[in-house]
Image (tube, rainbow, N blue to C red; front, side, top):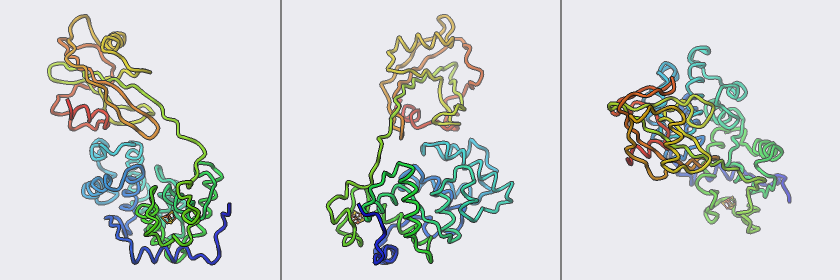
Length: 355
Ligand code: SF4
């Protein structure tokens, strides 16, 4: 299958014409030149839909109008604002990078792709977006949308999840890049992938429909090509809401795992579903209950949450203690009203909102 760029084909001209005449996609960070704001928007959007990310972006910029404001804010306050967005490693990296730029670099945001890529949490895509939008560096953004558009228009059958495929697409995307207006071009291509050449594309409105190989050969759903299916890990997380005199035992997740730095109740992880008696037995085995000084108050139905590579299922058991029991050293006892000050994963919040 041909994968060369046809010489007569003015890809960027067509794209920029579409952008000027037909692109009505509005986003608050479009045309933004402040690298700090571009960075915040790109990190929020890394694994989040625009509609959901919009509110978070606005709240973030309102709370932390510049990098120094973000850098000097305590972690928990930032995590609280991030709550619900998921993928908390992004937030941790955001905090670390803000403190590095604000302190070590005196607030001067790195300007070029290579320096940006050395910052924690900034990969090739985000570095290309910041350097091209804010500083007009000639760098093509390459993400899932760009893979899809290029693969379809040029009928590229290299798997986008292979090292060879990634290298090829990266090279190809940089050849297509408009060298005069790289920032405008990158934004236009991202918009085009989001509103026209979507997973289910609107080919009848597409300015490339006279040259798009996938469309002309009736193969739009054959591209992009992937070599492997992602593996989904299944986990059972059972949470114990241990209550003593109106206060609940919670702890911070500091392990290298999902929901890093967020708070949770006492956790009993299992390979499969646990019935109420089985779960209670495990809680006792852990030494969290002394003699008979407790009552099981509630045992929830199954809750679930699909993450990108993990399917989380689990239940919540509420246990009231009549005498304080011996719990892990990192547990803190928190009044029910104060719990809203702590950032919990969505999985726990959906239970708290429905209980
Ligand atoms: S013709 Fe259809 S498949 Fe081809 S680029 Fe346009 S929207 Fe995408």
